[in-house]
Length: 393
Image (cartoon, rainbow, N blue to C red):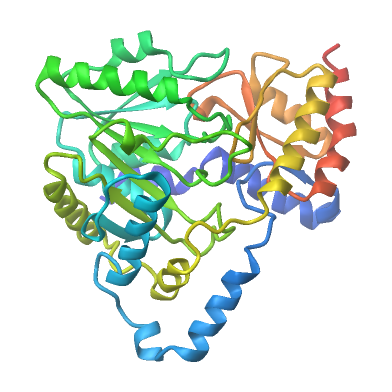
């Protein structure tokens, strides 16, 4: 018999992907210009021109045997050094190339890290709302998956709920800031309080509890600082992706950074290398490694996302919707006018509005709107959102 769990995952796509595929069907039926698809976090802002220029130069000038050949399993040493140097320069955090592991994007980073950390009986906590694949990644690594809801008022951490959830089996907490799906950035006050709580619990239980930072949206912040958690909490591992900052989601390139402040950092890095080996995630795409080496700190047009956010958020609030105002990323988390968010999303389809219900994000009664679309689509969608709300008045 084949693996039934994997069969189930293969037969039933994530809700996000299901809605995206429905959108593809509608595009073929009525034309792409008539479908108001806000389902997928697929950047519409093109990658900076420099990215293509670097790729073209590398292809033209680099020995093809090197350019298209294997790097070291954990990534090219010069690429890892460039990333390590950037971490130190930008955030003032101690770093080492020997604690950087190049990956095929944030999903690979998270999967590798969870497999490196988790033993039988361990628990992983996710702060809801969260990216639904966290559950898949954690359970495949062998962890029990525990959900702690953030405060509904501002989507900062509910510390009473979190403290009640932590026990001697807690191995890690996944932190995503700016957050998918709310766009909320955890404040420095929240991060400091989280660090104090985890240090207290580590002492209480005599165990190590790790923060796994999922950071694909770090560069997409609108006038707010995103605290760099390794500067606040020693037992931190960062999972980074260039997919959103450089508008390269299809290229799948990122890295894992193990903080040298972890007392067993070299052992954890060895476990990361071992997990990468066991999962087949060795030697991230060479061309992309060499490309991002020269693009560290570069971003796409963040102001375009901010413009989309401002127009959409202000209009939705005017129409009577309740939304969390995003500090970053490119998502709006909007409260459904009815308790059943899936039913609301079905009703929205009458207006060709494709929204994602929040149930699989661990937070019922909301929808996610991915506004990394063209500005024209934002403007075109406003009458549909207004008409939809009129049905509830």
